[in-house]
Amino acid sequence: MKTAWALGVMLMAMGDAGAATRDATIDAWMREYSGSVPGASVLVLENGQPVFERSYGMAELETGRAATPDTQYRLASVSKQFTAACVLLLAEDGVLVLDDPLRRWLPALPTSADAVTLRHLLSHTSGLVDYEDLVPEGQADQVHDADVLRLLEHEDRLHFTPGSDYRYSNSGYALLALVVERASGQRFAEFLRKRVFTPLGMTQTLARQDEGPVVASRAYGYSLVHGRWQRTDQSTTSAVLGDGGIYSSLTDLAKWDAAWYDDRLLSGPSRAQAVQPATTTPEPDVDHYGFGWRLHGGMQWHSGESIGFRNVILRFPERHLTVIVLTNRNDPEPYALARRIAALWDASP
Image 1 (tube, helix red, strand yellow):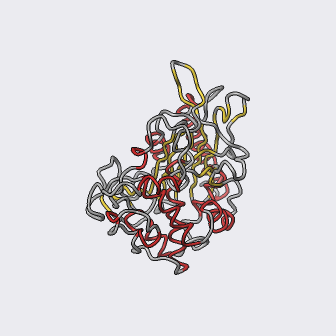
Image 2 (cartoon, helix red, strand yellow):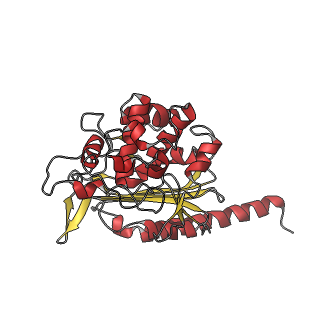
Image 3 (spheres, helix red, strand yellow):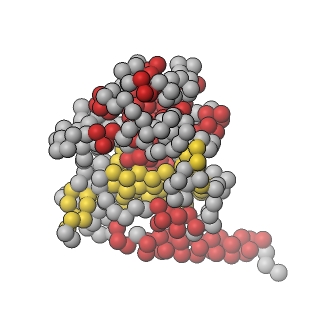
């Protein structure tokens, strides 16, 4: 009969072998990101602990700077969950109400927006026109959140009656950043720093502004053009913060993930609102949208796509499992890869 000690050693060895197999499998899947090419960083958290954390390839091709778990990638639309958290914090403060009319905070908008509320913006049910379609062709200067408001001031129309349908809207989240500024009296980037990043110890995370702090360990974005990697780090809309302007690292996103399990940032009711189905959606692998989170079965997730960057975060809260894949290249979109990685931990929703 095996002693308890011997059985424990055997189980530990089996666990080590399983972890080694998973590590080797993920390494094989990440082979195209390895070497002197735009890279990726991958993190798997189980029960709050990193069970896989590895970076591949380059954060900056021109200098040969390798990607690491501390490399800061542009999160693109993964930023939306941070914007939503800011609005929820202000609601907890009693400064605003989610059902506030948008024009209470941004009265310059046309009367077509009379029925639009902050809740509509959070859940992509506002019907607002997409600001990207309004940027003049050939414009060289970057658009900022305030410019989004100026563009929409001249559009006295909506795609549909607010609350009657779903249409993913970067316009809505850009305007939410402005609402945060009006309600708090602080610049959006500063509010994020003081109320979200600093309390969580996210020292490697910031909303990037040309006049603000530098992104010290920044990954630059690239695209494969005619068989060669070219830097494609910024577009006309890359300076808009509310819908996609945050940079962060695996190290800091682990802290962000931890904050969704307790009250260190948001109260239980606020966290529940963020991941409560607010609307059904026609998107693949999405049953509903919450506030900055897509919902599919038992999975909470969001992707982020911007010129030169493709990212995804998958959370399985019942399993206490999270998979994060950040990349600084224009293709491929890593959602399917992240799902395969999650399946290694039997985390199918």
